[in-house]
Length: 446
Image (cartoon, rainbow, N blue to C red):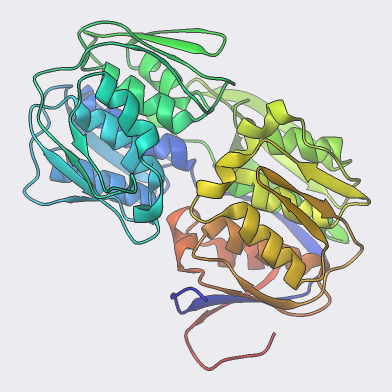
């Protein structure tokens, strides 16, 4: 089993009820800090996610000479230094468990005239980084990594980068964003073409701050030589966090939930479409736009779900929500399948294997593929012990599964839940789930 002593004990419950909001979008929070640091002027950020990952990004920018002040629990004030105002750090820059931070900052730092070293925790230090290093090397960056292509990353000083036309071998918003960030320091246009469209937070925010960005299908083009101008950034609720409660509301035998102020960027809401395809009773209320991002309130009621084969073209738009989807599929009538999700193998854990083993421990039949899985739904799941492998989304998904369990679900290694969803256990309890947090203590049988 994995090493953290924090665990969840989740008892069966039947009814959910409540109206609440979830923490701010993690992807937008990361970018708000980075682009606010590179902008000219003061950026006021509201709705910032104060999780371990995003706070690591903020601390790294502080280490690089940017004044960043917490103005409220979810508020930041960033005094930008412009594209060329960062200063070298005397110590390695610690990304903790934040893969988004490491991959995007590699692009941001690749064009600097000073050297930097990016490090991470044990989990992040196993994740592949050549996928972002390779295009940066084509742009003239000088970056060293381990023989396995992992962190620590040593980024050497350069006099500048050259613009390239890069075709991503996989659909990845992190690769695209990394290359675009480096493109801010290039001597010519930078183009990124993906095999399928992915999250467009970087393009939206760059455009909002004054960069010359154009999008045509799956191709994004950035012209260099722009000055980013600071402006207020309002971060909506994170759809990935709302996803656990969408599934909870749909699979609970009774009740309804309303989740307010959720970001509904179409590159993020694949799970919403998939749950609706499964028969989930979900309604979008008060749909609106905030700072260029679509936002709405989501109402979900207890539903009779049916199995679905996830369209392969939808996979990039729900890549982070597959653990939550797998719980919904386990509660649906029939056998659901997912293919084309190779990226799940290299997330915080091997999410295909982790979800398969966890569901099997609860009595659910799962067929595992290299690029996905097939899940046979059933009326109820049993209790059991789950190793989340330090993966926050695995841990939260199995907490939701207790709504349809006949016994206690014990979930190990849950400390990293705070990286994306601080206060999850408290909010889940208010919504009707039974989630007890244990810090160490004697062994218990599930």
